[in-house]
Image (cartoon, rainbow, N blue to C red; front, side, top):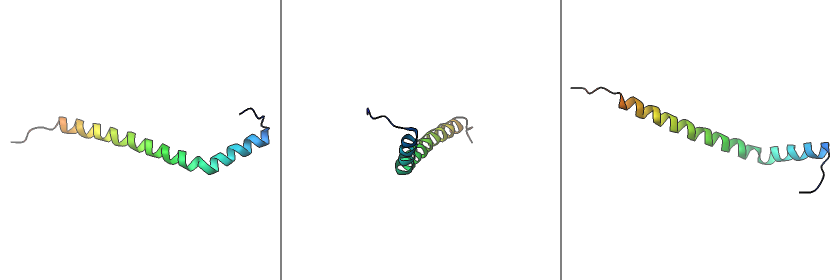
Length: 56
């Protein structure tokens, strides 16, 4: 875009985008964090099973 924005216009535009699509990016961040968390939990779970002792 080649249009110059003043300070007020830029703040308005940022506020507009934050209100309109901010929740989408926030929820996407939560989704990504949850995926990382679940992956690490699986790794920990695998490590715990790997150190189990055999029961006779």
